[in-house]
Image 1: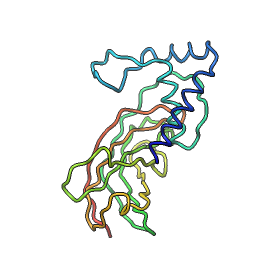
Image 2: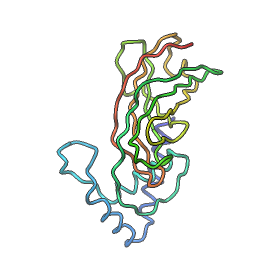
Image 3: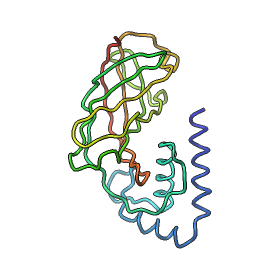
Image 4: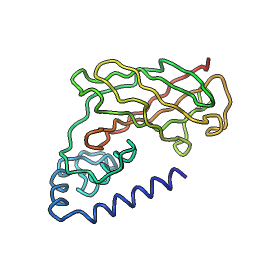
Length: 196
């Protein structure tokens, strides 16, 4: 179901690109020239097109719940950040609430970036299966320095078919720029948790 929704958003993004005036498409192409592709080959020589940059921004805004036709923007590098560990675990009415300690560069703009994650719960010590990871947007944007951000995993027992007291959480995450819609490169972490 979510894959179908993602595909529908992608089709709307492509349609929006086709509707852009030629001068606006040229501007997107200009802004995309220095942007290195996040896909193989990872040789820092492959660059993306203006259409790729536009579609990426469109998808980013859609993930943030603000789907619209983005204005051309220069690519800006993302601030360094890290998930440092799980700081809180709570279950409320079938929702697993996971809070993570986050560190972000002290010079980053507060509330500009929000974490988008692909998460899978497994028995402790088991590896992840990319096809069983599900997408979640952090409940709040990140702040510079050390902060806490959380995710609400609705119906987590049904989603992964596991009703346990202890899990390994596999999380593959990016920063979404709330200003441009662009996303950073993926980082992957795994943490063990015990439910209260």
